[in-house]
Amino acid sequence: IATGHYAKTEYSEKYGRWVLKKSQAGKKDQSYVLWNIPKELIEHVLFPLADFTDKEQIREIARENNLKVANKPDSEDICFITDGNYKNFLSLNMNPKYIKKGNIVLKTGEILGKHDGLTNYTIGQRKGLGISYKVPLFVLGFNKAKNEVIVGEEKELYKKEITVTDINLLLVDKIEEPMEVDVKTRYSSKVAKAKIEQDGENIKVTFDEPQRAITPGQSAVFYVGDIVLGGGKIKC
View 1: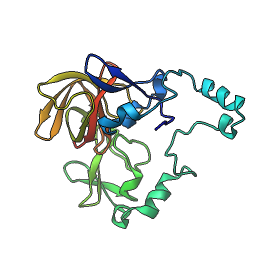
View 2 (view 1 turned 90 degrees about the vertical axis):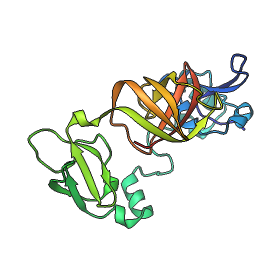
View 3 (view 1 turned 45 degrees about the horizontal axis):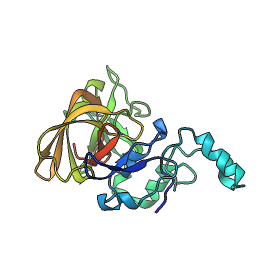
View 4 (view 1 turned 90 degrees about the horizontal axis):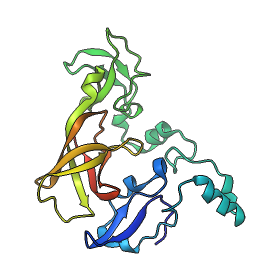
């Protein structure tokens, strides 16, 4: 299978297996989104864009071959939502109970205002909350059972430890002992130094420095240098 993702595969003598690696594309590297590929398939996937560093190089190849997409603008949003209105997409496809109005609260339970649906907010958000308080407030999380948006001060957004579930390891079969790795918790974020260790079926991640606005449901991807060790879903 050949795919246009910016990523790379090669056989590693050190690890005795095919490995998934970062591409040469810098910020456009997409190895982060590929952590869940079954490891036995890695050697069968081709990434023709692996060694290209500039999108303009790809566009030039497309022009030379008279492809209509040669000058198509880059997509920075969700590709299958063509009008860019993800809130409308969610309102049409999600359980209606998550779109109902509810309370914006502090961790103490104090009600500060109303929200217009949980789907309209994201962890770390400050603007558009429609509330006033003695200090700036940010979205910390959600209480789905009570249909609440939980807010607090920016310092409360930082976490030093998280649990990662639904693990898929590519480089090793099991985390036998604590490992020092780089961890990426969002596609657009930089990697952060951390220690990972097996915790039952999950992996516990302890960052060297607290990380801001880590979001449950996002992917946490582990790197050893430019090789993808594996990844999973952030639980907390």
